[in-house]
Figure: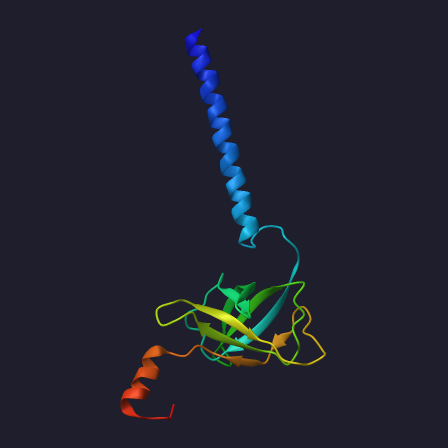
Length: 152
């Protein structure tokens, strides 16, 4: 009889642990924005240099994550990085906005930053942001500083 009581106790404790684990998973998914928390739409941008970003990189507006990079390919005709990203549905981005690859700091990672414009017209799903600024290489900046050169 004691062995059966231990088995029932182990099953109940295991079920409780699983329930807590599932709860943590749903909490983490909803707090990071990867859960089913609303709609989004897709925009594209073409960068001369997309160093430091990849699929899954944050897209931020005023320091707040509003989207994610969902795709990157090389355009063989223009030799530019064609980037696809999603934005939350509640973000209506003016159609004169710019997009840049920014750094979190000297040793931090990169993210995609949206610099909103002032146009009364907004981007729609599938539109392309034309005003882009690629990533800046730290080594290139240091070499310019050391050599005193302003030329690219």
